[in-house]
Image 1 (cartoon, rainbow, N blue to C red):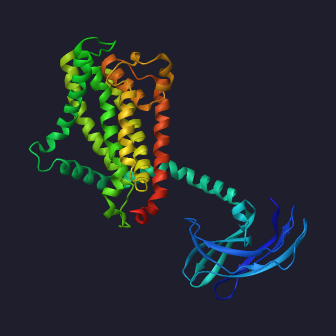
Image 2 (tube, rainbow, N blue to C red):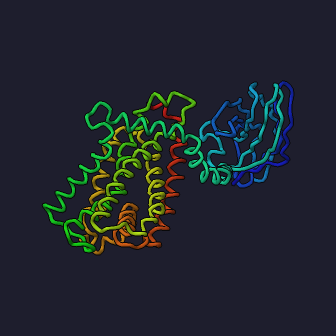
Image 3 (cartoon, rainbow, N blue to C red):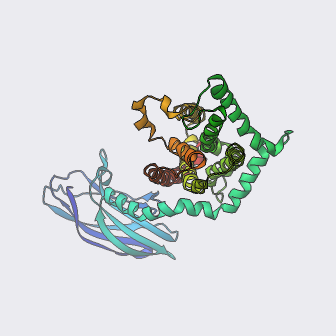
Length: 404
């Protein structure tokens, strides 16, 4: 850093102005043909508000030399908090603070046309970003779940409407919520179980294949349904984007909840199959919440990310359709993992859906708890995805109205 600011002072001036005094010191390089300028930002959102006239630097500063400045800055007439940025600026190189140099910030509050000056200090953009991240870190962990809880009534209503509207007017009506996953499962069973005669080592019978296959499909169905629809959900609900009071972050949540309803129906059918085939459901099924919660968090984080990106990239829906097809076939759902090359297994272990598939089969068919070393990694990944996905969505949603 080659700039320092000495003897910083800020005080209220007349007519809502702020008077700022300081000495600008050039430490390692000469300053010539520079100006001193100021900008006003919103401290909460870091959005630019206004910029003042540049004051020319009257003298050229050599290394170690300094000169004094006094600025009278007119604040906006509207009441509220503001943040002043004061920095040298060059007509060719631009603002020195944007190039990593130190600059002055002052927090000012305007009340009834009068300016009240708070803290004034020198800093850098990198330091401001670190401070902002430190303040927002607790919010990142809490806000995604608070947003879902705050809008729970709206989510329940929209999920119910989505499920009913999807099949309204058809002969099967809501029954298609059960028939759709069943027909899909039957199709894959016919191809892999009857035609290709795939068998799992845990149970080599044809009915055993059905159970292993259905156990693998249980986490895949809600995941693929929600993720496949997420890139177009903002475009489908573009009329909500213009409504300032509508919580847009609930739209991807609705997809995840709709997929959960599909899974619950499929889970009931699967439990019936296990009961008929084996006479009882293993007690290890109580581990289901330990798998279901990270499954929902991982799906939700991915849906938040894709929903926000899909508002800008219109081809994302078609790309995700291909990615999901590829994801399905590289995950051992309709075939045993022993069919894969041994060298692929370490990479396969990093697939969160495969971790879920093995967990579902373990608790429902093999009578033991999910593997702990995979389960804790799944929880960490799921929470990280949920937090990062919400932060991404929250950052981009302010511009949805401009691109839709």
